[in-house]
Amino acid sequence: TLSGSQTSVTFSGIAATYKHLQIRMLARGDTSGYNDTSVLMQLNSDTATNYSFHGLGGDGSSAYAFGSATQANMNVGGVSATAGLASSYGGVVIDLLDYADTNKYKTVRALGGSDRNGNGTTYLHSGSWRSTSAVSTIKIYPGNSTNWVQYSSFALYGIK
Image (cartoon, rainbow, N blue to C red; front, side):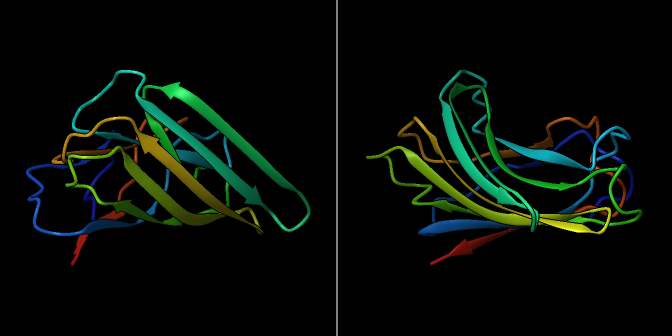
């Protein structure tokens, strides 16, 4: 849980002792011009264009889909931002599958949502990191915000 605003959250020194990893987050971005902010992720400090992702979303009145390849990060969801419902935080659960397997690329799936000033939005995302390296570092940062706000919370779990 953040005691003040912060530009990113990084989990490092991740041991290769689990089958999968799960990140549970409850966060809010600080940009005033947006109802929500994208949750972006980089693995092992890789900033090259080795990521692909796609997503589905809906807010009760409309649905949408998007995707992108050869990106420098992976979009894994969305959470509340300052223009959204006051003091509202969005939640995302991110599963990083077979993160220590050095024989295949890494796959991510994520489910999350936020409150857009009274209208709920839900997201289902998946992505790929085109590397066979075991994941030892995960960086999570807001897309169209400068910082995660105070009291945003991030937890990493290992799944046997």
